[in-house]
Amino acid sequence: MRDNGTPDDPNGPGRPADRLDDTPSTEWTTTASTGTRRTRLRALVNPRARLAVAAGAACCLGLVGVSQVDFGTPERAAKPAPAVELAERAALDAASRGLARPSTAPTTPSASPSPSPSVKPKPKAKATPKAKPKPRRIVPVAGLNRTQMDNATKIVRAGREMGVPRRGLVIAVATAMQESTLLNYASGVLPESQSYPHQAVGWDHDSVGLFQQRPSSGWGTVAQLMDPEYATQAFLAALEEIPGWQDLPLSVAAQAVQISAFPDAYAQHEWLAGEVVAEILG
Image 1 (cartoon, rainbow, N blue to C red):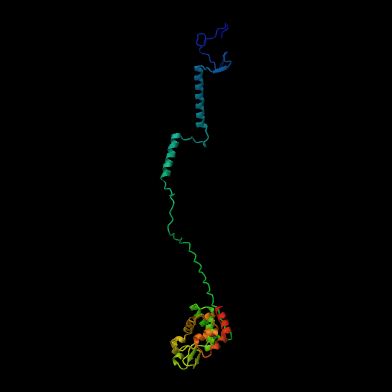
Image 2: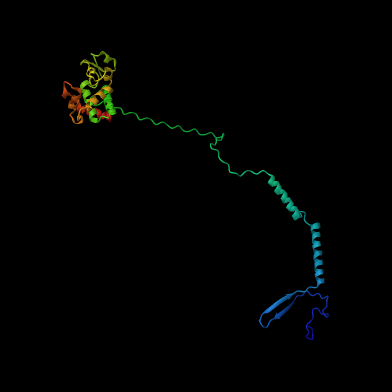
């Protein structure tokens, strides 16, 4: 504003055109109706001043560049241009893509993989065979010797194979005690009987074996009756045909089979026969 109160015309002829004024001027405008204050900051820079500043900056940059070329330390190398760096990276990527890469595909195990040749399979430990339980040794009882006890055992085992109950086994052993004292007899009347294993020779007609059965009475052949197993089965088969034989007294049941001249003699062996059967059956 001039001294007379007239505002200065910024474009008028009175304003010097070559004024270098880089001090920002502030203009405040107040609006009475709204009561708010607005501020504008204007920085007017003379074109010539701008040119001088630009020239000075260029000069400084040139000096800095010269100082870096002439006086820079040898350890600091100039960084390659972006284009050169990209070309080098592209070359490295192409070279790395050309290298063979290991396969990452999962391998399928073979059905029967062979053991490594360097690792010998351990021999399987041989299972120690279990020792078979020894059969229980049957000892002679009731005053019998070894031969008599063995013959009684053959009688009991033959009856067990037939499924005969214990009562029938006792009757059979008691009958053999009375008839042959549990010895396998051959007959002096039948020389053929002596050709088979036997422990004694008798002379009671053609009676043979443990039960003194006669071939002439239809009990069997001489060879059959000299076999203790067959002779026992023949006696027990005849015993089982007697009705109610299990409930009969031992002497009555035995006499019904043997038809002996001394029917009451069988009863005396009942208790001893029971002891023998008990030892054999265990």
